[in-house]
Image (tube, rainbow, N blue to C red):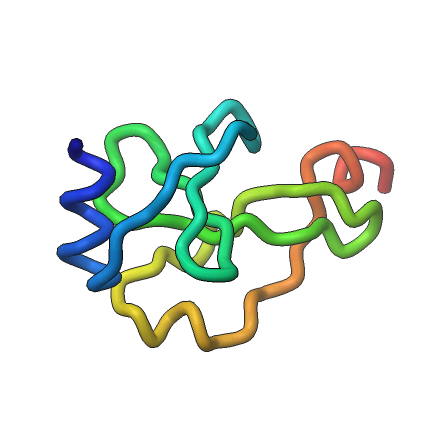
Length: 86
């Protein structure tokens, strides 16, 4: 219920729960985008590929505050596993 309310309030669209998890968080589909709602947060974050291994990770730097945020290119990041290798 909370997830749908936040999705409609901030992104003006409902989300659909998927049977997958990234970094322990439930993944939701919002059109062609995959997003998560971190615990105790009021804005969704995008699920993006790791720059090095291509695995799923959460884009923590940029919260999705408006529907237009989904059209912006995501910031490339390394997952925690790849960043520890350096």
